[in-house]
Image (cartoon, rainbow, N blue to C red; front, side, top):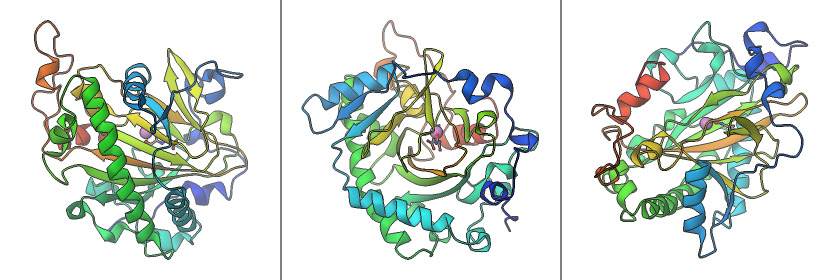
Length: 336
Ligand code: OGA
Ligand code: NI
C-alpha cells in the first residue's frame, strides 16, 4: 500500500517562503549558473519534412544530444488533447490523485508522486509527476492510468501511436548516421516487434515562492534510449553546453527530442546523452510531457560491436549488465 503523497502542489498553495529542504547549494542555483541575456547558443531545430533531416539529426545528436523537431507529423490536436487531460488530472482534488500514488518501497516507477517522498537527506525538487507505461500493451498497467478526466485513456493511446512512429524514424536516422543498418538500434533495444517500451510522464511544476533558490528538476541525463518532450509554453528546460546552462527557447509546436544514456553507450560515445535540468517560476505553473523510450529489460547495455572494432576501444564496459539492472542502479544511486 502506497503512503500519502506529499505533493509540492499542495505545499505550494500554502507557503510564503521556500522550505530549507528545497534550497539548492549556491553552485546549483539557477541564476548564478545560467547564461544571462540572449543566449548565443541554441539547440538545433530540425525540420523533419526536409531531405537533410537525417543529417541534421545526426549532427544535433553528436554536438548537443538534443534538438527541436518541427514538421514532425504529430497532429497539433493530439498534443492539445494530451495536455488537456494532464492539466485536468492535476487540477483534481488531492484525494483523487492519491488513488494512483506511486509506492516508493515497491521499486516501481509508475504512479503519481513527488520527490518529497524520496531519499531523505537529498535536496528536494519543486515538482510532482504522473508516470505510466503506454506501450507495448503487455507492459501497460491501466491501474496507473487515471479514469478522470474523461478521455484520458484515448488521448494517451492516440499520442503514443504517434510517438511509436516518430521514435522509429529517429532511431533509423541515428543508426544510419553510425554507418549501421537503419533497423540496428530498434532491433538491439527492442529485439523484435513491440520490444521497445514507451513511458509517458507528466511533470507538474507549481509556482515557487523563491524560484532563484530552487530547481524543478536537478541536473541529470535520461537513462533511457530517447526522450520526446512537449511543454505547456512556460520556459524552464535548460541544457548544459560547454559548461554553461542554456535556456531552451521552445519553438511553438515543436517536439523536443533528446538522446539518453542507452544511445550514447550504444554509439560508443558518438552521440551525447545531454545533461539537462528544469527551473521554476514565481507566478506560473509549468507542465511538461516527456515520453521515455526504453530498451527491453533484458537488453545488455553496451556499444554496438561494429563501433568498437579495430582502433576504436570501447569507452563503456558494463560487464554484461542488463538495462533493468542499469535502471535499478541509477534509481537507487548505486555505481554502474
Ligand atoms: C525529465 C526532465 C524536463 C522538463 O522528466 O526527465 O528532464 O522540461 N524534464 O520538464
Ligand atoms: Ni530528463
